[in-house]
Image (cartoon, rainbow over all chains, first blue to last red; front, side, top):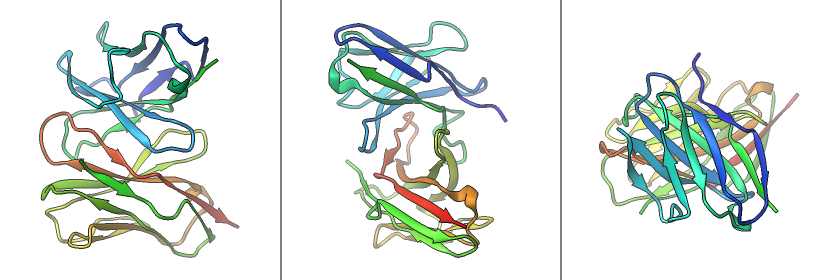
Length: 115
Length: 116
């Protein structure tokens, strides 16, 4: 069964550095998402992306964050100047559509540790 | 804004027995979807079961079933004949019914341990 793949599985970065998290969504999916989960807290929505533009974003997704689909397969999340509080598990998801019969499929996540 | 609450941080059940995980939510929406996702240790989240709010009939997927009480805004998950492979974190999630590339709102999760 097709899967969403995320790389790297674990990223360690110095505070203030830029980091790019990568995702390869399922190939026939059209909607892409990023979520994050700070240790011990809920999974939180960051952003959704469709047709090469952001369709919805949360308050967390400020100017520090950006997303891009640089080619036909990758979907990236960039954090420009990382802060300690950006340490979290970041999940990418994709779906064919936005209805419940086309649910979101999640990747394994990237654990981001900011030092 | 929507909120989802899972009041049981951890639960355990003996293999072959039945367990029910609780979920309540708060919303002003009338049309929405509810989901249960399972996240095994060090693995990705996978969809277990889904329910459309406009459907009165409770969803069932093999050993998994839900008790959807719309008026009470409750959406519990029942796992029958629990198996060791059911050990995982379980997340309840809410999604609005529209076509805007919608976000999932998650509860805090319930860690389920199935004991042999």
